[in-house]
Length: 279
Image 1 (cartoon, rainbow, N blue to C red):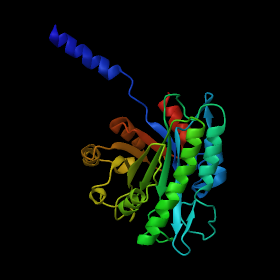
Image 2 (image 1 turned 180 degrees about the horizontal axis):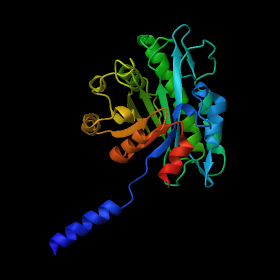
Image 3 (image 1 turned 120 degrees about the horizontal axis):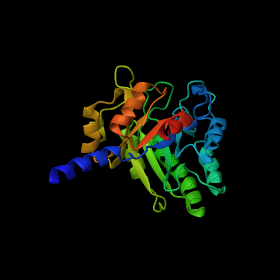
C-alpha cells in the first residue's frame, strides 16, 4: 500500500502544473515585429506597456536601462551610447510608468503577480564596454538609480500597486554603490540581481559570479543558451532565483525554460512567450 501511494504521489506531482515564469519586457522593447534599434526608446516603451492578450497585460514587468555617459556624467535612458545622440533622462520612462500605475485596470497578466521594475545599471560609460566607471561615477549612477526607484515607488504607493524593484548589473561594484547610497526611506521592496550573459571571449561584459560574493543577490540572470547544470548549481548555492534573458526565441531557449524553470524570462518577444506559456 505504501509503495502504491508513493507511485501515485509521483504521478500527481508529474501532472501538476508548473509555475509559469513572469514575463519581463527586455530593454522595454516588445513591439512587433521586433527591432533592436528601438531598444530603450520611449515609443517602444509605450507600445510595450500597451500590449494586451485576452484582455490582460502581456507583460508582468519591464526593464529600464540607465547609462551614465562618462564624457559629461549624464544619466540617460539608453542601451549604449553608440550614436552619440542619446539625450533622454534615465528618469523619463519611470515617470511614464508612474502614469501607467495611475490608470485603472491590471498591470500584470495575473492578479496575484507582483509587477517587477527591472532597473539595469549599464556597466560601461562609453561605446567601449571595457570603459568602466570610476568611483565618483559609480556613486552618481547609483544615486540616479535611486531617483528612478523613488518615482516608481511613489506611484506604487499612491496607487496601491504591488511592485518590486530590482537593481541589476554586470558590475558588482555598481551594485555595491547602490547599497552604499541607499536613501533613508524605501517604502517599496527592492532586490539585487547579477547579470551573467554571453561568456568570454564571445563578449567582454560578463564577470565571474564569484566577483559578486558578499552582495545580497536575490536574482541571477543567465542567457539560456549558455546555461549549464554548473551554473544552475551556482544559483542555488547563492540562495538566489534564476531568471533568463535572450534575444531570439529558439527551440533551445524553450527547452532551457522547461528544464530549469526560471522565476522570470526577460524577452523582447513577450507576446510569443505569453502565448507559449498559456498554450
